Length: 272
Picture 1 (cartoon, helix red, strand yellow):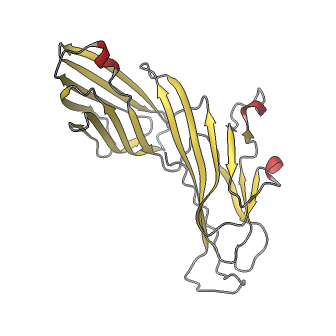
Picture 2 (cartoon, rainbow, N blue to C red; picture 1 turned 180 degrees about the horizontal axis):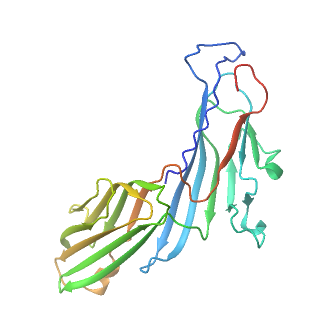
Picture 3 (tube, rainbow, N blue to C red; picture 1 turned 60 degrees about the vertical axis):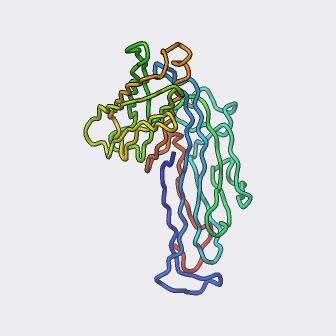
């Protein structure tokens, strides 16, 4: 999940000797917090297992190779065993790894990284978080037999985010049993959903349900009528799924890790 695209440009106009260069060419560095969520829901929509694998990715186009300082949450905790009993509301990461360029002298007490950024794109740190957190979506699946060789699958997806946020490029994938002959889709969509579509991909025996924009505090439902080549059994029902969901959420991250600031460490001609 792409999340919290935090663009922090640092602008100047110097070359590696501190002299002026083309004023139309900006020196910039960009910061993105990217998170990948892995969540397993049971049939009642409750979380069975959840993890977040995240990173802070940067793109540097700075001349002069200035030293930078990047500050994270002041109350950030690394390691669950170090979390106090009253850690509610604080970001607690299981573990973190840093790029080789990072100086960690001030990290333990100030949660600040110092580094000379490499040119181009690089990951300044990777992190992992497991356990309870509020997922941006919840899913509620149900299966009902409608005949000896047919059944109906209902999938309701609810957006748990505030209305100011939305899921982009949302794709829900429903694998079906290999003995499926046909499947028809019926979407019960609410307003403001961008370009909803659902189709049965016969070659892969799966249903793809997509939405360009899925607003916060809304829910969508898909009903899939499935016909089988043979009688429906409990074994066939068990082999449906698991349901996968891919999405992006601009300007949002689940872990609540954030960049407090990104600054030039020392005064350098041409930078502000």
